[in-house]
Length: 609
Image (tube, rainbow, N blue to C red; front, side, top):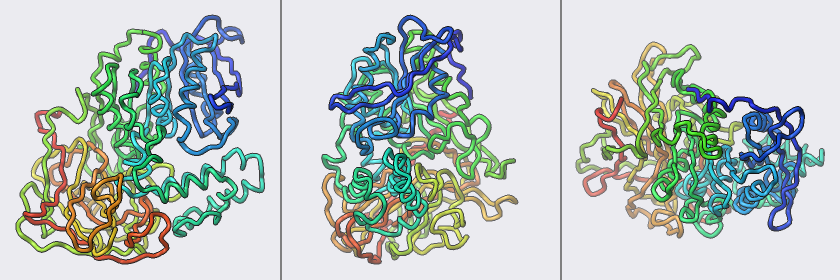
């Protein structure tokens, strides 16, 4: 899938670069930016130009190719190190200052003599989220954005999910410390930080993390961030900072044309779709949603994990795609992007479940353009859990509940999923849900479904294709003998056996978790009454998948997914500080009074093409 940009905008200019230009912030801190300017004969071209800006913690010098690309096409590209990283002054505490710093940077760009006052922002991951953060302050000269794989609310669906912590951010802190300004200036400190990062798998077992126990103690803002992530569970003022809770400020958010780009196996899939849904409803300017079958930043790939989605899956020309958007909204070129449908999604499925030439399961899929998200005409259909392990649209009959023992000393290992920033420990994407030495914590090659603490509910083999596209929610009636515990849910496409996969292939699609002390509200914890039955809502990440005839739809329920999520010690003690671990009997109910189910967003066959 190629987006060649706008005809006539190809490489009109040479490029000159100004390095480490000082950009002052309102509190006196100075950030560093590299300017890539359109040029003629080695000198900046006369006149005023629109600008595109990316603000990054990952070293602006790594954005050379992007900077030159846009400058050659008539933009000033501004690549900036965020506060406290590389050449920019100040202390780095992730995301905390990105709203005011971003606002000040946009307005600084607009005030320069080479600027025509039209500023667009771009970037992915941190650089996607920091765009949304600055947009909550509505800078007057912000005119367009391309937000790739960014958050809507870090407490709800990125750093934490339904109360549980995504441990990838602890990994991220250790990694980012190795490229801190302090480490790059001090070889002894860098050696200590590199050594700790090399032991990151071991650090995940040393919980609770104790202040001063690692080399992070030499970087107070980095270590404090880790301590805050581990202990701040309630949705309070900490999490309501502009850099963390974009959705808290939607009413104040800039009303500018924006693309939200994400992937079904990305760690920000829910945030991407949530931003589009909310802002498309309240803003007048065009909002777009673009979701592929990708892992975090993997839009150039045709696969995610061990599953192949075919040659049409990649976005081959990411810069060309962004250029069309900026040409329309920063230069006013009528290139037709405003007349395209607002939603483009990749619907996974349709392959033969055999191995591709690359050795991956051939699941394939196709692109679809739509008028909105969730798709118009979606039929939200509950599929109920039954005592015999079936999953069906029929409500459950009277039955005894299903208990199991959750032992946090022996957690269910993470095998793929919507993960990022944790490659040293976890691999993102779609994988057969069975043990494999590639995955942290796997001690054998048996399927996860064989574990006594994994409850499996699945349909019979399907007699016709069923497309599931949209948001996913599990409503689970459950109890525990503990004061606090976790419940996890995972949606799986079970491929039938064939010569390449003689035991079939259980492809993960989406998963999530709930920390039960937040059963009533994310704002205020309420410990459980042992053995009392609670109705729990587990919101999974959205997906788009055709469960083909002969496949099965499966839902796995358990109480851990480690190290994707931190372990609940089952004690009810303070988050991130309790040193005890306790086993607990957890129980799932599936009867007429307690109709545990997953709501599947089913697309009628007439709505497909």
